[in-house]
Length: 129
Image 1 (cartoon, helix red, strand yellow):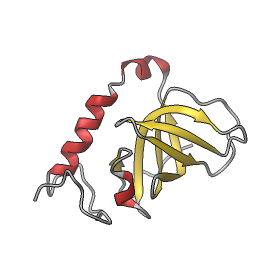
Image 2 (cartoon, rainbow, N blue to C red):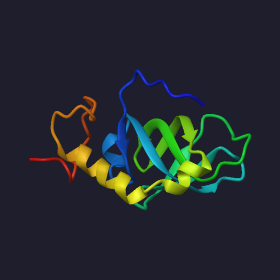
Image 3 (cartoon, rainbow, N blue to C red):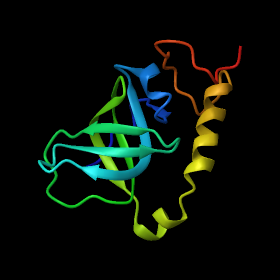
Image 4 (cartoon, rainbow, N blue to C red):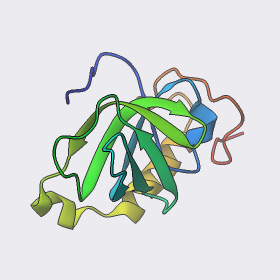
């Protein structure tokens, strides 16, 4: 699956996801479980929270390791539009805790180039006042 990079999306973790309901999001995490039907999967987000990802089409291949999901936030779920799997060599080097700290930094800085002009549906606990 290929993502449409021209549309702004907000990078989120499990805790941030509900703030972006109905908006484009990017979630990075580890595939924890794939539904037997292949229509959804559980992803352990960078903050350790489990997030349900609903796929547009049932999986044809086995998914495992680190995945980047592009889609629309729906509360504690993501309606997947596309996804990218990390090669195993890169997945082994992925530091989820460091990535999560970067997400918190992006949320805390106003008017920064990494944060698209997307408004959260309620206040972020990390947003600068």
